[in-house]
Image (tube, rainbow, N blue to C red; front, side, top):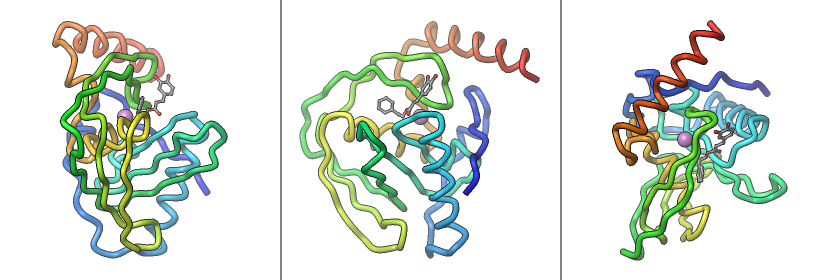
Length: 168
Ligand code: QAP
Ligand code: CO
């Protein structure tokens, strides 16, 4: 397994729209495993392939306390089950060190293929529902900072650009 490099805001590659996976291959199964390793190492609760510069519709999530509930979603499709909106303080491995409140539908159904290419569906509320919506946004080139004010977003951009310049 391998740890992958995570793109950081405002990298324009985070704005690419990911393409559907047409067939699970050994290579893509390996990518899923590497994405779990990268997420657990961070540590994080969710990671989209877009964040590791692979523009395919693949997401990994584990919102358990002890890394015991890995969920891989290939070609995920979200259906909103409840118009009620909840707020959550979101972060992102591509926006390290920053957290902002985002509003999203509280309950969703997700249909996807698992890591072996078998279809499954789950209903999600709470952190899992937030996380799935956040990760599917990544596949569409969208980031949680797109939901906050331009002033806050520009401040975050400046700070991250500065720390990226220091590291380069
Ligand atoms: C998305 O985000 C998410 O700033 C996953 O310095 C976030 O795993 C869904 C992380 C919140 C629901 C609620 C962020 C790690 C991890 C950081 C993450 C950081 C180190 C973020
Ligand atoms: Co994210």
